[in-house]
Length: 91
Image (tube, rainbow, N blue to C red; front, side, top):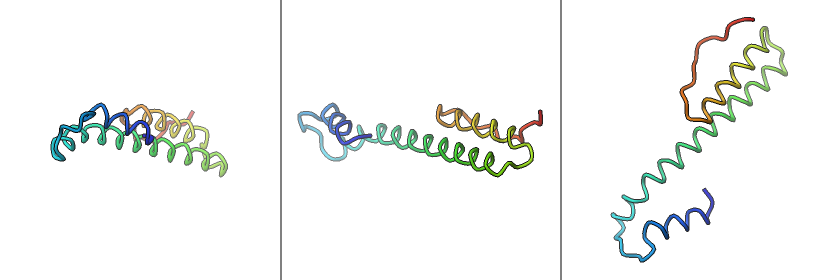
């Protein structure tokens, strides 16, 4: 979330500055939770993509299968879907 996006959200939630700190925090919390979840999903997806690159460079046994599995897991993470942690099948 950028500073401008946060400022716009604050204006939307309490543009007239009518809310007290507690009421404002209650309105703000769902937005913070969503932003945190999105950041975590992005971080997990990037970590999985980095691992896929490392496996490819090292050319482990069945590195193509593991790379595809990691990239699929990264796609799932970025979309907020569960990651399947079963071992990839050899082709």
